[in-house]
Each structure stands twice: as C-alpha cells, then as structure tokens.
Amino acid sequence: MITVQVCIGSACHLKGSYNVIGKLQEIIAARGLAEKIEVKAAFCLGQCTKAVSVKVDDNAVESLNEAGVEVFVDKLSAGGI
Image (cartoon, rainbow, N blue to C red; front, side, top):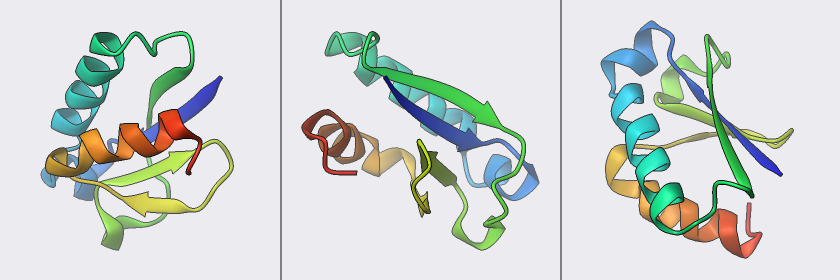
C-alpha cells in the first residue's frame, strides 16, 4: 500500500490542503485505487515553503496543488513516485 501524507499545517491549509485531500480521495475512489493508495493528513512535514506539502511513503516532500492532483495520482498508480 502506498501512503500519501498531506500536510494540514497553517501554510498548507492556507494554500488549499483540504481541497487537495478531497480531490485525492475523489480520484482514488473513482479509479478503484482505495486498496492501493491511502491518504493521511499530517500536521507538518517541515517544508512550509513548498505548500501544499505531500510525502509519499518515505520519499522526499513534494509540492502539490489541486490542479495537479490527477497527474500525481497517475504517477502513483504507475509506480513513478
């Protein structure tokens, strides 16, 4: 299972982290990927300048916005992250 942590700290919250989480959950459900990808909220990933900060398993923190969620899920499901 792939674990995606989305920061919900102050900077990320202001940049739309809850919208990112909602879009992730929507796309994952629509594509039937709930058994493969788990989305979790994280208080702070230590990369406030990259808001919205997202971490996949133990990989580096990435920046993600709502518009980029679909491409992000494409990469996840293809094993590219």
